[in-house]
Structures are given as C-alpha cells and as structure tokens.
Amino acid sequence: METANLAPTARPRAGHLGADVRGVDLSAPLPAATIDAIGEMLVDHLVLFFADQHLDDEQQLAFASQFGDPYVHPLGRGSDRPVRCERIVDDVEHPPYQDTWHTDVSWDFTPPVYGTLRAIDIPSRGGDTIWSSMYAAYESLSPAMQQAIAALSATHTMGAAASFISKAGAEAVARARESFPGAVHPVVATHPVSGRRYLNVNREFTESIVGLHGDESRAILGFLTDRATDPNVHVRHSWREGDVALWDERCTQHFAVADYLPERREMGRVAVG
Image 1 (cartoon, one colour):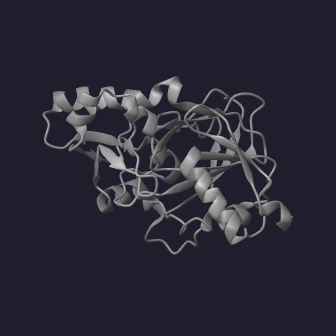
Image 2: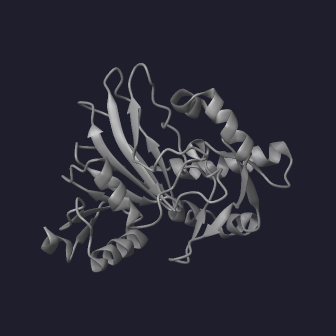
C-alpha cells in the first residue's frame, strides 16, 4: 500500500482539535514525505485518528518511532527490559484510573512529546477517550489573566500514584518516586513548532504553583485546570478495534472515560520523545 502513503488527507473532527486521516497504511515504514505530512497535520490538528489499521505491538512501536525516540516511563527505567508497546488492560480486577484529566508523565523532567494508542479489545459500549486543546484553554482566558500567570511555574509530581501502584506495584512506584520526586514546568508554555502558547497544568499531576501560599496555589490551579474540562475545547473518540490515535502530548490533555465495567478494555500505548 505504498502508493496510499504518498498523499494522506486529514478531515477535521472538532472545532479546535482532532482530524481523521485517510490514505495511509501504518503497518509498514512510511515514506519521508508522508511522515512530514503527518507532522504538519499534528501541528494543525493536535490529535489524529487512523481507522482500520489493525497493527500488532511491533508495528505500533515502529510507527511511533518514526516520530521520535521511544519514551521509557520512569517506572521502567533502570531495567534491562527492551522497549516495547505497553498494554493497558482495564477490567473488574484491574479497574481503570485514566478517567482524570492529565498530560502523560508531566512530572518527568522531559515528558513525552507524542503519544499513540491503538484499540485492541473494546467494550460493546463506552470506553471513549476525550482530548482537550490547551491552546484553546489558554486563549479562553482574559488578557488580564494571561498576563497574571505568564511568569508562573508549577511543580508536577506523581501524586497519590494509585494507578501506578495498581499496574506496577508499590515497590516500583517507590523507586520511581525517589528518582523522580517532581519537575518544575512553566504554567504557560510555548510550543516549539507552532509558537503558540498553551496551559501547561493538569489536575492529575500538577501539585502546586511555585512561590504561592497553599490557598493561593489551590485557587489558581483549580481555576486553570478546570479549563481542560470545557466541552468547547474537546474532541471525543469512540473506539473501534483497529483504530490508532496519534497526538501531541505537550498542548493537549486527555481523559479515558471509564463507563464500561464489568466489560473489558485493552489498549496498546507507545509514547515517543
């Protein structure tokens, strides 16, 4: 299907982000022109959806690796396990914890740049994923608020880490917490490609704003992280087996809807930096 990879097209899905991409086969290495075209689509649309791909773990890892080096989660660093596609299995015995607004591993010093998900086992209903544009969230603020937060920084940590303990165990979490006690990032960041500003705080991992009293920090963080919950800045995807999503981790947040238990949901995840 190499000819299908020469001129992929994107059809916008929502007002601020999201697009369905056609004319590309992700199972084989992509031509340089196609990689460049997808990169431009990411700048424009932030989240891309590819239907009917039906990749395996190795193919998903190879696809993601064309956009950066595979990102190793802090929980897996220091081990000799080869880089691989991570399986996320949510069921009654392993309940989902991704139903919070977050940017993946924002508590790392160098978080991932792009994320990929592929649908492996999808419940009969529910299990959608929602993304929000942090560009649009920032632009929804008044000029006075934008100016007030322009120079602020915030500390990001693992937080309670309930999901990590559930999936990786308390010992692995304790080791990761010791090596990665937290990272400080600007509250308002500038995207290195688009040059646009975006809100860089999230409910799950942003602990406090540097230099503020606790009550001040909680009030401002609560207001800012609420911007991600506004449906006006969302795109929502209902998964079908074989779907693949690719998104910019920096200027988006996402929320995995956990409305399908006792049914099972399994996804493949690869991030790159």
